[in-house]
Image 1 (cartoon, rainbow, N blue to C red):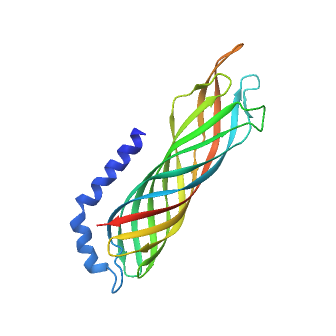
Image 2: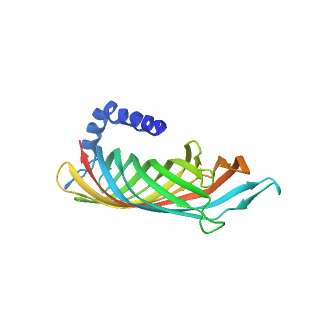
Length: 232
């Protein structure tokens, strides 16, 4: 989590440092009429997420990764976003970061009973945005980097592994509508694909005591969410 906090803190310094630059650009490149989408904004979002990961364990006897049951998970999510963008007549471009808390939880009960659990407790993204605008309506696509916090547990011993981070990419799109000069509301979809995540799982279930290697293969998360933003 501390890495995600640092990411957002760093981004928060950017709009302040270049506020005057953005103000100058608004006059040169802003819309000829209608709503101006240029500027710095902050806001919040809530939504529903669901995902899937293939689940392997390291078999010392065969020196290979063996399937240990796929894992499906879902969760409500909620968090904050911050961004900055510039309008160029009918188009707008910018950058946005967001952090959402969740509890994407699932287990591998479909193979060998309930053995491994996965929980994704936080998800952050840093994305570029490209939009088409028409007055107070904006339709956008977005893509960039993702970072998630994992927690894994072996059900037999119930000893959770240390939380770890997994990086990846995210892409999606949405629609945003301005309510007045400052406030806007949005609805968006994001698909996130994370890198394989290997973990040393602790076991304390005699006669099985020790650790074994577990791997979540390319965990995927889908997000449908709504939000509101205040533009400065």
